[in-house]
Amino acid sequence: MECRDGWIFICCVEEHQWQQFVEIMGSPEWAEMELFENRLARGANFDALQALLQEWCSEQSVDELYDAAQAAARAVRAGLDDGRSARVAAPAGARFLRDASTTRSPGR
Image (cartoon, rainbow, N blue to C red; front, side, top):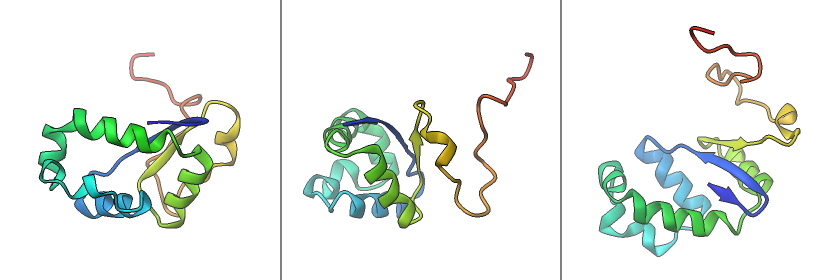
């Protein structure tokens, strides 16, 4: 999602992750709509969900949103390409994040 000053990756695969992210957004009324009642409904109605998320994210800064999510241990990763990525730490014990500049794709 595009924030007012950059990009952020939001990943809410599990229901509790979605509910936690809804809390970060201040529990907007639209999040309680039947269209978004579970992950299957959110997937089926992703175009509508994406528009609402984008509207909200566009008012947030990357750092504010990232810090709020990390403080609450949410599944968010900043989409940083401006030198800030060097100071962004993975959650303790995380082994799923790699530096893309040093990772080779298969067959390369």
